[in-house]
Image (cartoon, rainbow over all chains, first blue to last red; front, top):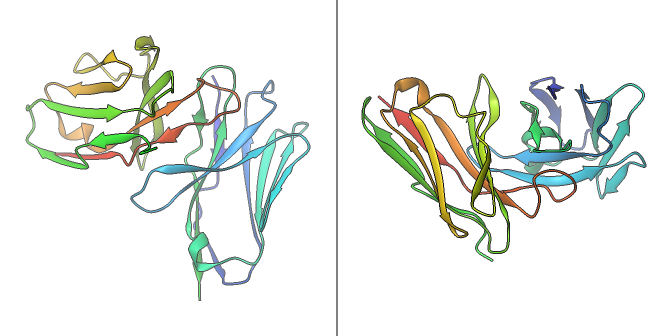
Length: 108
Length: 115
């Protein structure tokens, strides 16, 4: 059974800070993952994919460590609009398995 | 593209009543998924369809829950009779694949409250 574990947080950071979340997974065969973002009372939306080579999109950097079976998401220069819950997702071979998410609160 | 469309956005019903949730997937997406989200359990997959055919319904909690997809552009999730523990946000999502690299596009969800 696939499992994805995340620290629920919340992570409270000031604007401009750098923050990182980790996510551990149980399916050793998984080779790529997703990070989704979910705003309060909204639907989850795809943020970025994560591969063995890592992925960077502006202020966001995602890394995959297959040896230790964890994924990380780094957010630099945090904005107020980054406040949300970040869900780690294992696509696996069948359907997507979602972690419960890590809540980020960015304050002025 | 209008995205995945769900209705209603909010539903408040009394215990024992029938509840029907509706979903229109993105045109061209062959896969449709129904998820339930609660604080305690996070996002749980209830059932998914491929080309209108149910593939895996192992996540459906019990016989009170049923789902149909009569055509490529419409699906329903029905709860009969509803119970207070069914209160949750129900999301429909669609995709070009079940797993792998495409990800899923979610609808705005139906917030169900059973009193």
